[in-house]
Length: 137
Image (cartoon, rainbow, N blue to C red; front, side, top):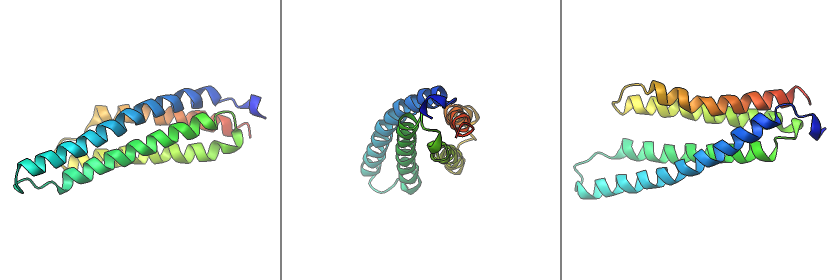
């Protein structure tokens, strides 16, 4: 059954990309939280950092979810019976991208159209690969 996984290439490549980008985002999330802490310390309480911390922590959680999704995709790319799990994790990453964009708007910025669309490309391709695998099972 492993040789019949039609979407295995999509799943493996997008999974590897998610591992790479998730790793980078984890590092950036940690740096962002450290930067927020430094700003809060320097401002002596004049900076309301609640939303900043929320966004930083959300970035870190999203990055970990993307990283885990990538690992799950690479691990299960030739296992059609695991396609549903891959689809579920891909949807989680998409939902986190949507929530991240909403947090950006709540924080006072304009809706990040380009960033939002760019953040959807790999998870959508990941889901397409999983769906192709599922059609084999």
